[in-house]
Image 1 (cartoon, rainbow, N blue to C red):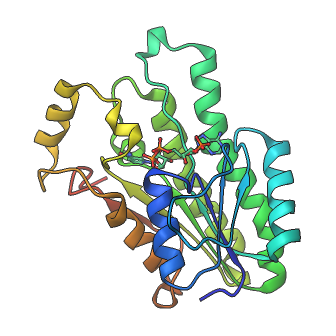
Image 2: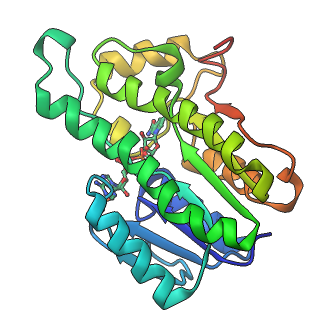
Length: 238
Ligand code: NAP
């Protein structure tokens, strides 16, 4: 396992909190970054910092504070993300820009921010949390799907750029997971989605976290540029 600090963005709730908990249990020194600057309850975190991943300045500042306080960053889990759903013809510029800025530009800037230290250390693990929606498409989610599909291009390009430095970059693409994000869905939409999932249920956040734990663990050293679905079969074939 990498010896540096493990940063989980959006690690205070939902999937990110499950990832933070698992990685703490696996022996990582975990620092959670989110706008609120809080960590999940009852979790032996190394630290929690405030960072807004939609802001280049806030990312640079947050990563510097993490490195100054806790040491070099060895693992990045870019998990923070938002949805602002609307049909294309009604989608505002703000809905386009804020989702792409947070989910895609934010992840690129985070990767850039941690890459220098990882290159110096000649080791590092990066996992980007995408979505089945990025591969499958979803009516009313053009902004979100574009941002999540973009992460695949980011990971595969970085896998090529950084592979010779001992750094792996992978994508985890969850299907529908029981979190605040999916709690916002209308009952009829939830039923529709359930009907399309071969396993017939939503994922738990911990089922996503388990795959992330594997990817940053010692057995995944030869896996890079991969897109691993955790979607109950919903996105099969994409
Ligand atoms: P969630 O419960 O809504 O939590 C979102 C997390 O992101 C929070 O920790 C939030 O923290 C953080 N966040 C949002 N905007 C941020 C910003 N600008 N700067 C820093 N942190 C920010 O979401 P979730 O369901 O756990 O989703 C986590 C990731 O998985 C997202 O990337 C999402 O797209 C992806 N995903 C989710 C599902 C699902 O079904 N839930 C499926 C596929 C993929 P603060 O509000 O404190 O900043």
